[in-house]
Length: 289
Image (cartoon, rainbow, N blue to C red; front, side):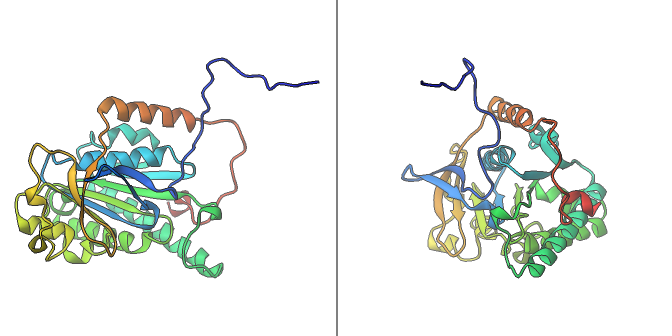
């Protein structure tokens, strides 16, 4: 006797099919080959002039994150609209409020410290996918708003110091940081902060110096300068990965409709199911409140 499994016509499998431990597709290189980044164990800095394509790269990573299992987002967007489509999917969404931003960074640092305490107790140096802890992805659009524009000088300095701490600590405990700015200058991206980002993407810049500020001193003089990217070639950038040489890439582009469709789908897959909640992990986000 043959048995068959009942199916529903037109049914579409749902649920998280990705992981932040998977390589993240961000676009293609100059030879048309796909480019993937290991975001979970690296921080990424993207910078360049307005309209260069930074938001495309950032939204690619956000789109991957919201479709991943056991991944949580913390979003900073002083303009509200660049990361706004993902707002309802984030644990925290920080707009033009530097006090809120400082508070969230403090809480994230507590979580990072808790995770390292857990790793030490378990004789480990790095979080792994099978550990069951969530990846907390922090994304900052227009870093300059929080480090030079909003609030007082003291608040800006505190924000920058806390961010430097998170970028320093997050790499091995499942708390990567993605930051973008359209003002590649030394006051926005000092070398002490830039060098903590294992991945750096330089979109079109107006000068060799601005390109060097993103990629690192000396790359422009070797011919790797984002100032030679045509203004009409949006999404093109030089990508520097840890220990490598900058290479030309073209970031994948998502339209506003694409972004909102992904956000809506992700929200539906993350809807409450009525299943029992998992045991609380003492390193988790809520415990840092």
